[in-house]
Length: 343
Image (tube, rainbow, N blue to C red; front, side, top):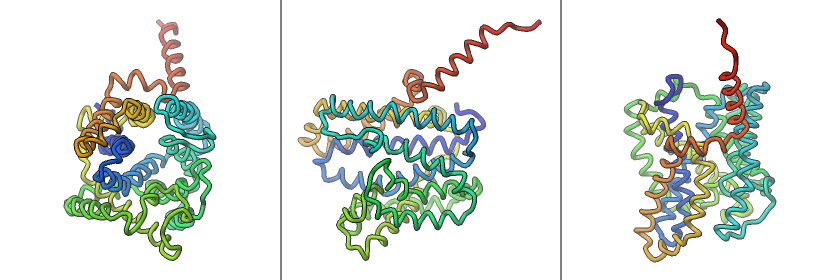
């Protein structure tokens, strides 16, 4: 069960979103299926904005003090320095992918979120000072598309900034409105509408805009429309994020809610499993059986997320997500066991 001090709804939301991260990355194994592109675009229209929003909401307390800066190093910087090269060489050696360097300066595949979240956290004490940073962040996002250098994934840092800043400024009382009956009733048709939009993504936008990492100069949209299209993608992402989150149960769901506290394990390790499945020839099977392959891939991705977040697997893998913190806890526990008792 989740600790009483935690909001079970947030843990439920986190587990749903990290599961969709795994599904989205697994979709790359079934590119021969036309349906895979629709599923991919539908998910990416809103689930990254939702993930960034939740990250911002959970970053409200960050300040430039030694304790929080140390936690930032332990939970984001160290994992990035370790897992970035680990996944890079795993992709080259096991999956046979021709990925190129430089390591760390240009984050590879899933690792971009760690370094971008670290940078967002570092500017959080400034961004949360006034609500005017919210409209300013929208302007920054629109202009961010002019940035074409992917070093440290600055385009995503700029492009997704409004969702992070919105998370910083919304209060629990605001999010309680997502539980209103009319919001939940509207959520379903909203998501259906986004699903319809996803069918025609390439006619009104471009898939690259959904990633927030591609410069406008590399997107096949006329210059006079590209800013408007980016803004539309942002608005659709915001509506989809809130619609999806409003449908997530607020009560404690037991094992599922508990799994929502292990999202870092899921995030850091799922890529290794997906690339292993690719190396074993799964894309060849899905090419021959596109519909069945798509269904099995989505179901397998859900099972993978749940398996990685399960307590037995989590206990084994969690020390790798924060090795220095794990060592400190072990030393502290050892000192407590050996400390003399009074009396």
